[in-house]
Amino acid sequence: MTPVDAAGAGDTFDGAFAALLLEGASPVEAARYAVVAAALTTTGPGAVGPIPARTAVRARLATAGATG
Image (cartoon, rainbow, N blue to C red; front, side):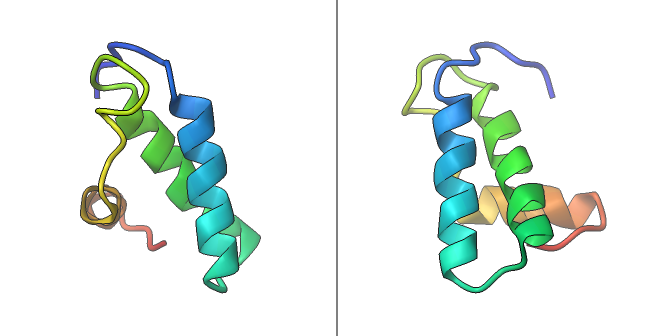
């Protein structure tokens, strides 16, 4: 993954982490998911456009052998 722009990565992490916690994930699972979501956000320019869909985050987690 090549970062392009870090704008929005922190907000993406926070939102993804909170969403998964509210859905019942453990803090570790939520953090793992949020880290991937934030990292994927850095692959495009801007703060909103590159926010990944759940399917993209789950696909990346699956290739890493993790769940979330």
